[in-house]
Image (tube, rainbow, N blue to C red; front, side, top):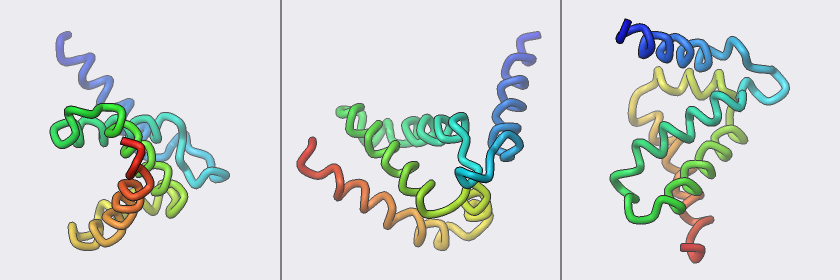
Length: 106
């Protein structure tokens, strides 16, 4: 029984990330997927920006927003199958742009 809940969350996460409930009009980006992406970013960035959680949240939100504007959800999932170098060539400019946008605010 204690393994049922984590398994349920895993299955829900897989379903959400598979794009099964996405719509074509927003490139496949659902609110659930967007929120999961932001939360994942916050978990990963927490150690780097622990002293300023508001900055971290704004940086993660900006990164997800700019990723949505640049590519569909399906394209972002395809990017995960590419090499780390190819991923960085797409993601690094997005993050740098967000850092630049937030300069002076914090």
